[in-house]
Length: 114
Figure 1: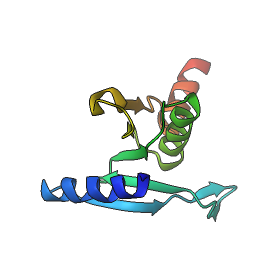
Figure 2: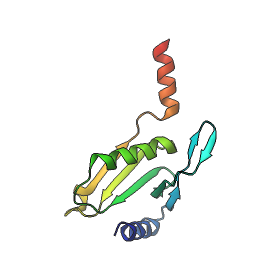
Figure 3: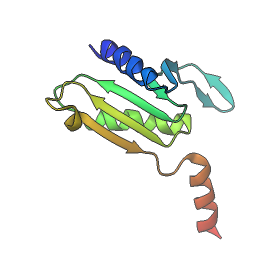
């Protein structure tokens, strides 16, 4: 069901004139080497928002952690977790913000050491 919801959501977003990438690969860079770990982002909207789609009874902390990991790896700041199994869609929406991308975190760490 999640793939069907993703395809429909991507269609609707494109109808609104937004750029949408589906099932975008997310490689990991480890020790300067790009590794394909099999991560796939459900949707990336306007090259800035990661959208992860679920169709589960209830969102769990692991869903938040997964999206936050994707945000950190990709360097993006905002993600949406959408659970289409919710009775009211608004109850199935969760915004996750990666407040400190690695570059900002490094700058903060350098400042705190000064």
